[in-house]
Image (cartoon, rainbow, N blue to C red):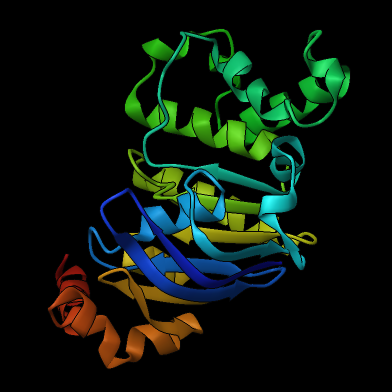
Length: 253
């Protein structure tokens, strides 16, 4: 569904990412891993057409450059690391912003279908009881789930996630990723997610991309990527033995 070729992108002082090639198929949960500053967030922003880039980004064979903003929003949604708070909308109103791509009726007030979609997602994310609360009164974890709700309410076929479990406690991390793993299997859908927690990437990813210094250094099935030398080279440490030693401690608790 998503195909990226020869992608270069930066912020005015040279390219942050260089010569990126990747494909994410329907039904795939593709995890992007790599150390801080290697270009993971830049890659997602370029794929979502939030940054100018050189190269090709296609959805089902069509260049994203040729999509209107509204039509692109029907196909692809991005949840970034830092979503700004412009106005203290309620939880329901913030989630409902994800419906703007689904017809003019929303701008005269949400349709019954919009409202049903919003309440269904709020219930899944355990936000239903907070629906009338202004978002500037929420904790960081609650706010992250509201922005996730807005992304899911958009109902795209491709979701790009940049650290979606940020600020979430363990129970909500697992609940969210369980839901996304089921979501991507339920039809013509794809997830591309940046995950710093390699345990979560290994648990939920069907494929992985490893980045270092702006380039992709390994990609393929997640078990193959994480078992290769590229993982240690990217992070500068023996990741696998560190994880195994940490797991050993649980045997004595």
